Image (tube, rainbow, N blue to C red; front, side, top):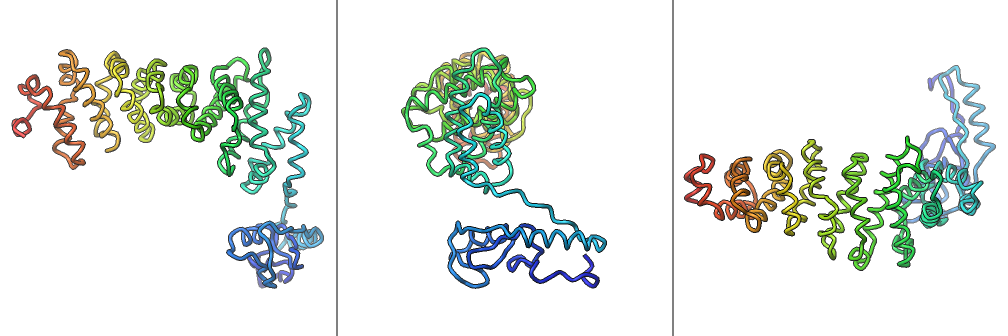
Length: 414
């Protein structure tokens, strides 16, 4: 806009932003503001009041759209288009609870639920304010019930709308104040988990081009449910839960899905017999295979974090040693990812050295370079407790490794 050629009418300017209003709304005090400006003002101010009159307002004060002023601004923009003034588009209608409450009952109708899901997903995708409106209208709980019902009743036809329902749930979940009440009863909790596992296990009932997206959403939602689950729930997770979660890693469903699966397994690993169930599901083999492919730093840290927990049991160590590249992978990744990964790698080697060190294993540790890496740990600036672990491993089998050129004499004397 060329200020010297066109003058903006004073009543087009928002008193807060001092910019031309795009969506003028009038507060109960009679002063008109741009919607974004006054809503941000009310949400962040310690004392909610009208910026111009200083009269008290509430955080959720009613703001009445000023359609007449908006049309005048749009007409003025069109008139002055030759001066470089862009026309202000008509704002979308504000989402209200009443509008959402009209959509939710349609989820029970086979003919109407798909159009309602499309509308709810569009609302949730636009902005945080819309998502908050959905939460306050009970949409998150409605999505849980809908997903459970849809997966339970669908046996012979493709699932339509499942991806949108999971996406809506994912978008609204984080800001729900009391998440545990969404799946408060044991039966509802178990049925919802079973529904998500069904999604992970099912490929032929979802459109081929959306399988990855839907299953990525499902594993993410499953992880969020685990975060709010009680100890009793975590201790009695079925083997199917671990089988399908490990299957996500095996299939490399998507980078996001693999990360979500790893985080969830780490979360539930300490409870009950979960560690053994994860091992029985074949997780150790899949973790080694996953790491051999070369991963980004944060994924490798998750892999080694889970592997260190699984190797604390005999079956977990046995599975690692059974893989032809198990020990070699642990040794290879040391000093290549992060100090945290090195810490877990040394811990894994310590567990093997203490409890699973047959003659063949001891020889393999030397052959694949694990002994050399442990010697390097003693020479770099690592935390004392990590060096203590490395020194213990070297001492345990020094009678075998002392003659190796990778064991410097000053380390042996140390």
